[in-house]
Image (tube, rainbow, N blue to C red; front, top):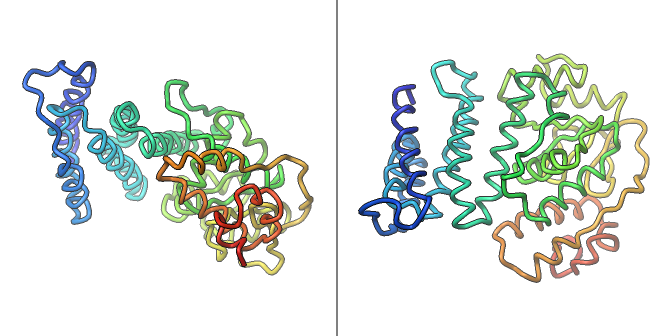
Length: 329
């Protein structure tokens, strides 16, 4: 969208946010319409995300208590910032303002709905971290933190991030497979400064964003003209490279790829870690059974058990074989 259109949308979004201070803060506040968010999603699927964004913003200006609409609006801005990177960071686009717009929308969604809104809100902070890496280099990640007023990830997702990081040697390179793994790992890095000497690579960004690829290549000591496969294979000759359970194994098609706890590892200097891994938070969340993200987290652990069956008699035994399909074989 053009700059003028975004200025208009910013005004509409601010009007919507003004209506969230109290239930009666807007005169003539409209009743909730549960069809608005699905209609906006359908517009986006048909290539009309901009129209869907404007529709949601105008609707929320008079119906600010619709958590589903706020979530959908935040998701649109998350997609917008990724498209901005994909299109080469055009200067006539608001760029990282998408993150601010999305954060404002998802903060309201967290207030009203929680759950998915919390995860999406943290994903926007990951986008902010990646933007800092692009602007300042990979070392910016060691200084990055999530603001204290941002709702933290559920414990069982942070636990996943800790398990993945603990599985990779401290001097290694970690390539993530999907958004859930990425946000889980980044959450641990942000709260505990746990990045250390591990270089976290998001292959989806590496493949599509030349600026991100340049910064990661500098961190890895590789050539930014190389594919992610070539870069990781070269790095694996002198340091450990780890793939998360959901990562495409074609990223590191090497014969010595082997399991280490929850990741697959190639390269020299790979030794067992004495760091504790556990799924107690996931087991607790399973008993409560309230989150729609439980299935996604179980999917990551199931993929890990698929290449490392020892996990079934180790940390995953706490979940039982009814929870992890790969452990029932």
